Length: 103
Image (cartoon, rainbow, N blue to C red; front, side):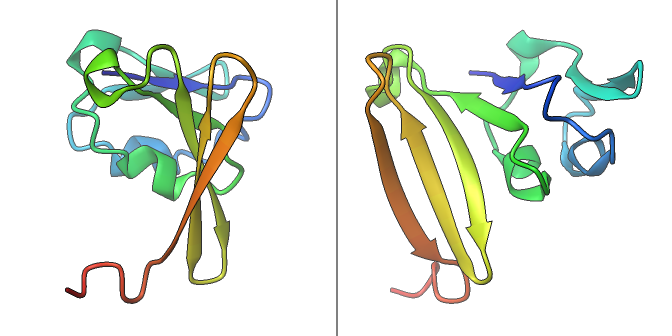
């Protein structure tokens, strides 16, 4: 599992670098870059910290992804997890982060 950082969208704030528990993201030429993609744990911490949505997560075939990419968009307390399917379809899962862990 791995992430993709959209170079053209990245503002070089470094929040993803600080959030990555594996120290797998670095700053190169003022933009964030995944240094060792194959070591990515898939924790999505970097996605949640990026203020401009420049980070996307590849969904592996084991998760039904088959080439899909997931990104996140924040709207106050709501996280909109957007799954971009290979044929252009976008599925959205919206979660209120304040009560996301309540059962």
